[in-house]
Length: 368
Figure (cartoon, one colour):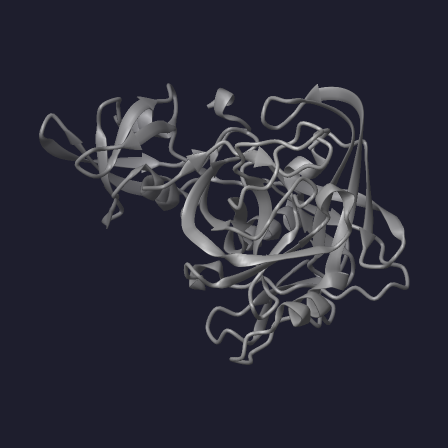
């Protein structure tokens, strides 16, 4: 069963939450080569860490390879606004990001720069620079920034194939908890395929759970594997306690948006600053006998228009079995807006096959 949590975003202080380079992506076929997601005119890229060696790196080696590619991000909000999880936010927020191209593109969390009037970035030991927000995607909590690197040599981190992860694999987080620059914490992959709430109220699926210590300020930082490659972007923590300033604190349960999601979103953000996600338009829960029980179908949404209604139990999508509501979310996420899918539902003891044309996800659950 998937765990859906409205966990705490990792912003410090509880306040706010065009180049020609190539973004480095670890190849899925051999585990050691690289391929790229590029903007129109790719430049040469040498990843900070993407080893093909079978021997895992030590914690020190991971830090030495990746630490200078991690950024300290400061976002300034000029007026008070509602935060991504209903908290009132204003002033200055700090978070983390990391370099994904040698000409100045960086990835962080969308909630780190949400509503920011200005964003400043300090990469490694380099100077603090003004950053442009290229685009944000609140459905995945991913943002893409761009800085002019000047004469600073930027070395991108490679994005691994998060589908290759296993529970127990070592993890390494580098970030800026409570403003403490480039802090390294270590742990393991505690669980896979978790589900957390995005800032806009939709679900982020396939999330990595780790026990590497994460605290406010770690938002947007890289979760790395033993080859020094990014397997996820640290986004939220589950916490029963709080720190002295009222922000949630580490309890050994952290969540990272998987790198394969990051690849897809960043590619779209590079193109036009926005990202699209397929939308079915249902609210579901796990059915006792298996499948995803429809609690409600959004009026005028794809599911409703195709005849899906409350009480139906979705058992398959395009011939793939649906075991629970998380499976349904993942199956829809694997598609694009405009795709037509065949959905089998159980209704009144009988099965029906319905054909649904998926649309683009609205900006928030409330709009759906």
